[in-house]
Image (cartoon, rainbow, N blue to C red; front, side):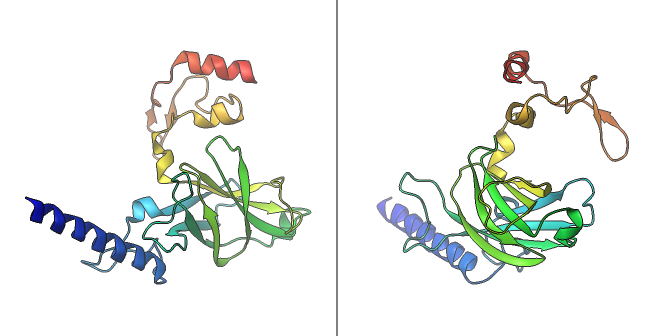
Length: 214
């Protein structure tokens, strides 16, 4: 029995080391691995960015890599995972065409959009930024009037959420920004084919508390 646990522990340690090495060897976490290759889950470590209205020709993704560390897994002093963000963007229009803006900037924030922290300046192509150390987070790409700005003020072009946010309430944005009626008056929405479906039920007490905040 002791031998079994020793072998299992060694297997886990070696597997974790190989897993981490692949994240740091230049392989894109958003690429599909070769058949049989040990690799991080694309579903967990790759964030597909969603374009805002007017920017449908723009696309992007964020590959999460473990930040540099002398250990297998990089964490903060209080145990939160640390990731570098490999941000790949395509189809961004000239930023000046959007108004009085000079640069595209990437931001990371908690799901309630506070606090929010600047990751850095981005553009078409791939940029490695970081670190990100929130347990649950959203990534925003915005147009800004300066590359030195530390406060988000411009329009959102792309946005995406970490896999860890999937367990949040479906109306989290209403709690974050104030109730905006994202489900409409009837509570029904439609998919691309036009078929109506109802969102998950949300406790009325939550909506009431949201209205009090607005």
